[in-house]
Each structure stands twice: as C-alpha cells, then as structure tokens.
Image 1 (spheres, rainbow, N blue to C red):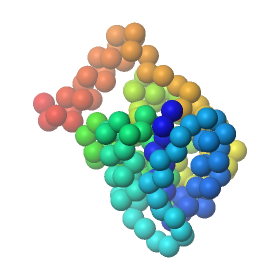
Image 2: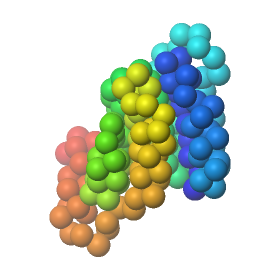
Image 3: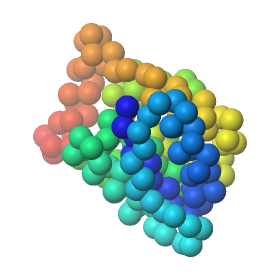
Length: 149
C-alpha cells in the first residue's frame, strides 16, 4: 500500500519511527513533510496528504500533530477525505470498516509509540465493508453532505 505521511513540528518527533515502521510493514511512504521541529502549520501537511490520497498517488494517508484534532479538522475540510482521529484500535479499524476513512489522524502528545504502531497497523489492515448496505447508505449520505445536497 502507498501511504502519504504528513506531520507538523509536534508530529516530527515520531516521524522517523513511523516511516521505519511503515516500511517494515511493506508499505511505500510518500513523505509530505515536515522535516524538522521548526514550527509549521498542520493544515499545510494535512492538505498535502489529502491531495496525495485524492489523486491516487497514495492509497491512504496519515496526519500527525500534537493532539491529532487540528490535523483531522483540516483534512476533513477537503472533499473526498474522511479522516478519523483515533486513540484506540477500535476506532482505527471501525472508521475504515464502517465509514470508509481514508486518512488517519494521530496525536503525538496523546499516544505513545507502541500504541501509534498498533493504530497504524490496525487502520491500514482494515477494509471498508462495502457489502453491508447500511454502511454504503451512510457513506452516500456523507458524500451528499460534501456536495451540499
């Protein structure tokens, strides 16, 4: 799987570990920044990750800021992105299986590295349950909200 990864300066603290872990799992990583602890704005990296997912350059995306909330909010402003903030494995897989999430938001100040690894593994291993009518129906309603209808 091709995974776009974007972090702000707070997320940079775990970026190298995430890149190594993703590669160990056999994924290709698309680096959407940042590359230091110098202050950057999370909407910029969330936008770059979202564009990679929407263009098809990446199959899924991961965004990281201090809490994960800001990056999730920013990513979800982009039509076609369904970003889930997860601090537990149930949310990490359920957001994909039921809601077709295509981006995962993580908070580097909220969860430790072992849990980050488990959340990433769980999120990337999950698949949307497109054979379950209620999940498809709900996804269509979300897409209509994006279209303004």
